[in-house]
Image (cartoon, rainbow, N blue to C red; front, side, top):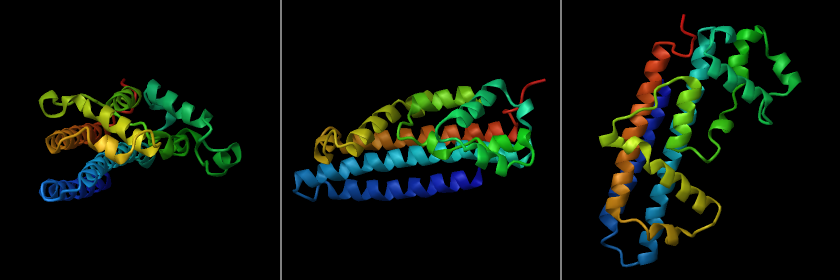
Length: 213
């Protein structure tokens, strides 16, 4: 999980730098539309952090299972279902490609039946992370007083999709948020993702992806 945490920390620093710039310059510029656009950009940066952090962490689960040569046969049943769904999906490997890279099907299936794009599909929020926790078996609970259990992620995802699909303009989205709103959203997102990543780290150290005896 070292690389996952390093990428997370790098993007947190980027967002903090941008937020400090935003906080310092919103009061100094008279261009109201520019202020709104700058605030919308922060929401996009937060979604980028959410999607990269979660997709990287889930990928690390598959890498860790394969690294330890854990057989498909001893994985938890819910995780087996995840792998089968990947295999059956339109983003799964083709039969030719699947066979070509298999030396031990019970072990190599774990790595080959994973498509990172299937995780990072533009719709990651606290609800989808909770579902991932159920399917993979990691703890998705967090400290409510610090994270509100990631409730702000649903707003971030929705606003990101509004901007990505052109439903609303950057000025229309940005006008809905004060700098205080954005600071709260930023801090809750950081706290929530930190705890989720730590939960997945513990899950990997304990090899909680395996069936219990």
